[in-house]
Length: 367
Image 1 (cartoon, one colour):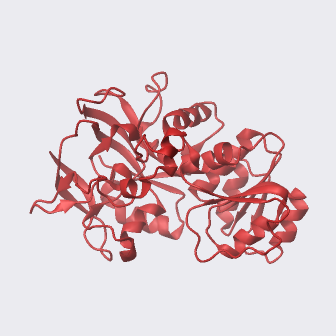
Image 2 (cartoon, one colour):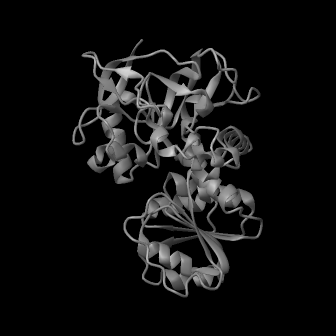
Image 3 (cartoon, helix red, strand yellow):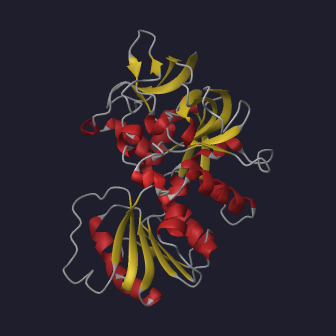
């Protein structure tokens, strides 16, 4: 079928709306009409030549929409079902069997190449060139996508009639990552003292989750005043300027030694300050890739502190995303406050606003 998609033809060119031919779903795949899809910083990775992503590519990995067709082996969803799309995983490796799908042994080829694991593509240009159209299993900067069924999360039947489907896509990655880091990876408990560095989409989701979990101190560390104000509205008990030269002392004064810190910035110097702010057996969670080597002093971990990397909030999407929807329905996880919508044809403005930090979470609407 012919579909309209935002295609990246070269690393230094803008995304351009182009008609491509999309294949039908394979035996274990699903065709989904996209209602809306988030724009994430990860969707800028195809612009980096060192990533080795075959161009042209369709990015987008926070899609939500309606199932239109299923392959013959698919039993988990049916045409007409509203769904949220998350990352792909094999389902059979050691990590997947241990309910850690984000640590899947084939996570990279399934999610960060734009192709199926066997290297094949699902879309072609008008002149017959293969388009990398399986970015995170979905490539949702498009009107329709073909997705592995295991990456499809049905919207619970009791919510399907009253949830705004077009803005649910970021639950499949960014919001899932931040909230999952707090609720799954760090297991924040009532009375905990939590520090979150970076008040973007992931960080603000983490702040809302920490507040929901009953943390008594939720400290947001952020450079931008507007983001600090928003963090305070969404559950942060304290907000600090990340550029404060006395940040370490301020954190110590507020928490007396944090139970958990979560970094979403990737800034090594800030991460060491965060680790130092932990109590003797506290935990530091790291989301994303650090911007350079992380040097940890010989005594910083000796007392018992833990540093752990976190991917996708250590979530099982089909279990965790409905949980987040339930919290949203109760008014305890108001992720919709972070979203600004753009028509898909205005993707250049969404990318610019995202890169400059003018919007917390841009959501593109294909229609």
